[in-house]
Length: 71
Image 1: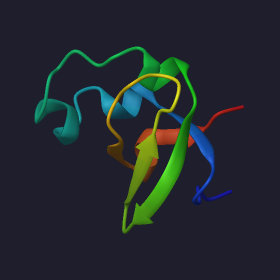
Image 2 (image 1 turned 60 degrees about the horizontal axis):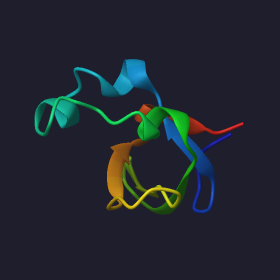
Image 3 (image 1 turned 180 degrees about the horizontal axis):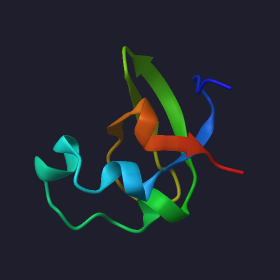
């Protein structure tokens, strides 16, 4: 099932580590990306804007293949 606005997701460690996006910023990826729920706020092309609401962090753009539905 494709990810859409409002879907609760988390980052997929294997897809995010060593990606171009990870190399372009701080290499220390915070654990909340993989352990907590984030809500998809917007989708543009191959990217989703994810808001992790339980922690005080900025929204983050992740490729669709770097996230999975949080179950």
